[in-house]
Every structure is written in C-alpha cells, then in structure tokens.
Image (cartoon, rainbow, N blue to C red; front, top):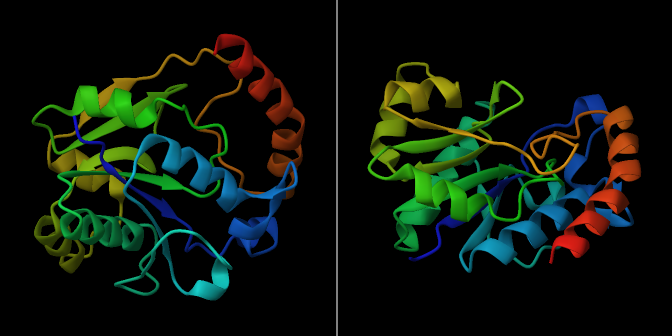
Length: 203
C-alpha cells in the first residue's frame, strides 16, 4: 500500500506560547523538527504548510503557502489537498507542528481504517482530533465548503462522512497532546524522555 502524503501545519501565530511556535525547543530540538522526524518516518511524501518561510526557518521539506490568509487551519488542509494531488497521492495526513507525542503508526492505522470514507479522525480521551486526521484529498469540495464560510475541519469531515477511529494509547500521555503554552511545553520536556524510553523497550 502506498503511504499517504503527510503535511505538517506550521502556520499558526502561537500567541499563547509567545509566538514562533514551530521554532520552540523541546529536548534541544525545534517542535517542527520533532514533527518532521515523525512524518518522514511514516511517509516518503511530506511537506510543511506555513504562511511564510520566516515562520519555520530552514527545513528539509517543501513549504506550502496559505491559500486563504487569515482563514486558520483550513489553509493547511487546502495546501495539503493540493500537495497530495500534485504528488499523485489519494490520501493526506494533516498533523500539527505542536504534537510531539503522535503515534509512530498513525498513518498506517488511519490508512487501514479509512476505506471509502472521506476522512479518518482519531478519537482520543473523548476528543476528536481533526488536526491529526487522514483525509481523501478533494480540493474542489473543500473550496466549496470554504466559499460558504466554512472553517471548521471537524464539521467539514462530518458533512462528508468521516469514520471515527477510537485510539487506545499504550502510554500514559495522550498521544494527541498539543503544545499550546509554556506550561504544556515544560510538561512535554519532562515527559519526552519517558516516552522515548518506553518506545525503545518495545522495539
């Protein structure tokens, strides 16, 4: 099975964390670098969505620019759909640059679940995770939704018949945890060594 494309969303302002979220350091590496490592381990077709290159610094992947400035995360999904189509991939996994604990088999498990559905959305700790979902790349459908004022990724997925994928984490930390503020970053700094140690023991 061909791996889906993976696009890392890195275009947010990150105001709650003091700005420049993709460049914030976690265990000596940028949050964006953690996301790149996760993405490239799961697919050979990866890119980064951002408003401008200055947001993310030097990166080893293609950079996709926002189609609708100021529209929020739907920009990243629009960029992801175009990128997947250009690369000949039917599906694309959209992830945030601020999710350092994402499962290492995320793309594989969602690919197995999506079938003929338009999206596969993880459900973890009772919460839907559209920013870590696998999507069938359909740019015209997304453009029509946005033209009607739609901005919610979850609502777009639900309107088009997404499948929900319950996620039972093998770790104490919710793998879909976001780093949105300095406190969350400090907590991730404490948790990351434990997570990497447990992964080493399972491998």
